[in-house]
Amino acid sequence: MSDGERVSSLLRDLGLSSGKKTLLLDVGCNSGDLSVAFYNHVVQPPVCGEESEGGEVHLLGFDLDEALIQRAQDANPLPSNVSFIPLDITTDTETLQAYLSGHGCSLFHLSLCLAVTMWVHLNHGDSGLLQLLSHLASISQHLLLEAQPWKCYRSAARRLRKLGRSDFDSFKTLKIHGDIAKHVREHLEEHCGMELIQSFGSTVWDRKLLLFRRTRS
Image (cartoon, rainbow, N blue to C red):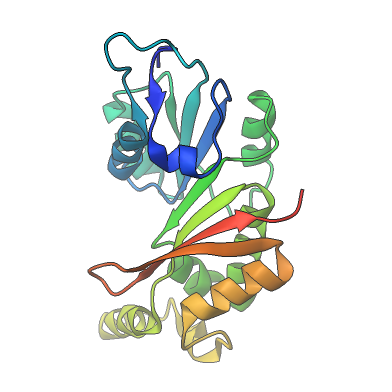
């Protein structure tokens, strides 16, 4: 990215100042298409005649699936500013911290966690979900989160049962259920020093998009 590129109003609304290095994180980035589209949305080229505002915007996307990450890396049109790595966030808490340190930052300015929470919850139980939320809160200034509703859990478990698989046997033992978005909000606000600053309603899949901000330094 050249120094002349501008940051869109979205990041300005989140408090980005001119000349500030900005780090974005995409949790569970899949093959990276959304990551690149989001980067292009928030970072825009300068209008002719405008002065450079300086600053750098970098995005890191990661996914558990190494094949998807390889596809993301191969198709990445912005390798200088967008990076993709394979990572299991439930077991590796050091890689993201090392990335931050390498850029001289303590926090990601904005982390995206879209349609990820259910899979962590089903595979790692209530404690896994809460640990994910706590970890993301500890490394993020802002967190944009899309939590799948409970009906998605039931559908996922039902599909696997029809296939004769028992991957999500723990589904019946989960104590966090019902209004998942409410549980997520309560944990982030009561235990992680974050506050909900905007709810974007529901997506076409009936999922709420929630934007949280860090309240403690």
